[in-house]
Image (cartoon, rainbow, N blue to C red; front, side, top):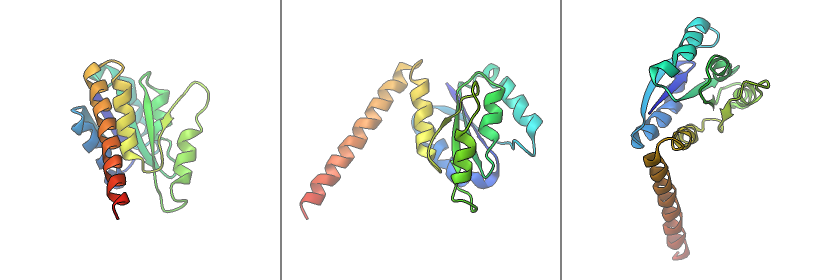
Length: 160
C-alpha cells in the first residue's frame, strides 16, 4: 500500500508534514513530491498517468491559492485523489478550498478542511482499509483511542 503526497510548493510542507507523519504511524508507505499544476504541468500529468503502475493507490494533493493541482491530477488518473487546501495569505485558504471542491462532473476530488493534514491522511487510510483489513483494525483502534482521550479529559475537567 502506497500513498503519494503531492504539494504545489515546498512552502506547503509545514502542513503536509503532518499528513506524512500520520500515514507513517499507520505503516502506510508514502512518496512526497513537489509539482505545480501551473509551473510543471507536464510533470504533474506524467506523474498522474503513471501513478497506478508505480503501486500508488491513493493520491493526496496539497495546494494553495488557485489550487488546481488536485483537479489536474484527478483528470489524469483513475485513482482516488484527496485535495488538501492550504491556507494562503490572501483569503485564509478559502480560495484554495473553493478551487479544490468545485470540480466539474466526472472529475471527483475528495476534499478535507483547510490545512486538514491529519484528515487527509485518515481519509487515505480509510480508503485503503477497504482492501487492507489490518488498516481497518488500526483505524478502529485509532478511533477508540480518540474516544478514550476525550473521556479522560472530560473526567479531569469534571474534577476541577
